[in-house]
Length: 607
Image (tube, rainbow, N blue to C red; front, side, top):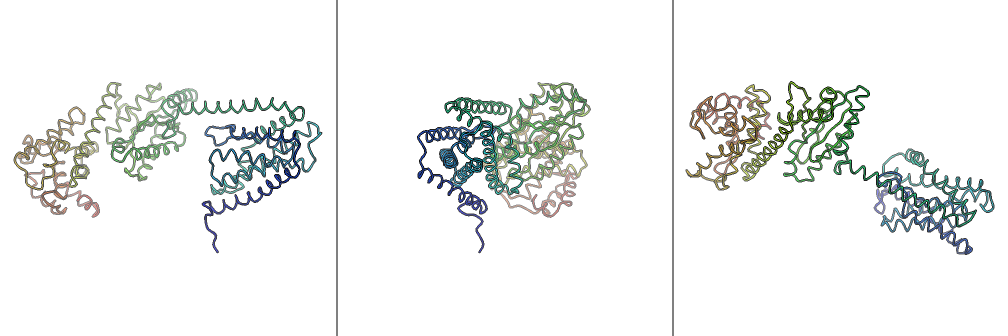
């Protein structure tokens, strides 16, 4: 018979471990209660036990935090549990420990399995704490030295028992070897053991000397808990003030402090370091199209990858801007950034792989101060953004222009206007199911035609951008015209012929010359019969001629309201027929070469 993987909603091994712990503790608790019922304590002893129970309960309800995050709180209730175990015996210590932790966990609405396990663990620990007096005799009328030895031994047995028991669920949950978990727990609790043992010994000796002296320990002890809690809260507040809430990376304040520290260290040691400014490409589009949760996921993914880079410290300024301080020279940092971009490209997300633009500058080679270093890194970042994005730029005076603050502001405004234009184009395409991917496909085709014509990389990047923006002016056309399942009237055709000029006007001042001119002339014909200005032959900008061919090919191979899609071969035949009249023959030939190089699946995706 195969045992189930889960019992009562718990993993089988965890259920059995908890069950075994409860099976050991339950008889101890029942025996202790029975012993008290059969042999009631004196009023003095009962009062003392009730006092220690109240102190233990208060300590359990207000544990002492040892580190930030509350995951290593220490309950000083152990002090009073061990004291009762040594001074009054296990029959009082066991129910005291069990009831104290039970009230605490029930008040905290903890799960039943956790309550049962912790009650059992504390009961067994309390019994273990009483073993020194069980073996060597009662603690009545012993000297302070022997009493202190009892307290240290009882504390050791109590805390060791607790660590060994709690290691079981941890090893099961983490699927880690029990021995390793237990050894790590014992090693980490060394200071806690010493603290509890000393305070427990002090509490026992004060009680034996005069019961009221316990107040001399209880008052400062709970004051210490309050002070430690306040100290941890202050540390957490200071950390929060320097930490980005979403990613957990340092924020701009932490970055500024770390940058100045690295400059001082570099000046002292003579070793250079690099600053890499990182910007997520088209992040607003991700938020607008896929929602802010998808955008947050992209940011957290990037933050994890940045934080995993060795010899580096990562920061987030807010939005989509990050910085990385790398204890490496410029070329080593550049290679790290290339590897980061390759990692991002392999991770699929709902919005597609995240791409980033990066600007890199090195201290002291590229800047002699924090402000100067940031300035040149900013300029390198802008170079990356303006030259196609998804790339890294290592600052060089011969390549990257350093912008003034005013110019950087104008660049930011230009980028914002350009993003607005891209969003308008996507809105135009989304207005009809027939044009859902039109601009995207034209962008791809325009770039590939440029490659086949032997144009340089910068020109190809601009062609892709021109292909994306060429129909921007159609935002002014009514849906009835865009989706008309018939021939257009002369008035409607006149409206359509105005869209290149309107698109050009929307791009005015954006600063993407000559792309705006290509948008204006992308419906000019080789024979001079196009619009809006009737340009002919090579008077038409080359970018416009390329976009015109890409636009026509996509239109022929896609469904339209007035006709069904045609095949790739049919589209090429039509373009070839009109080469020399409507289209530039060299551009049509370049498109043919590209399509001939395509895999069948790629050709189908374009159609």
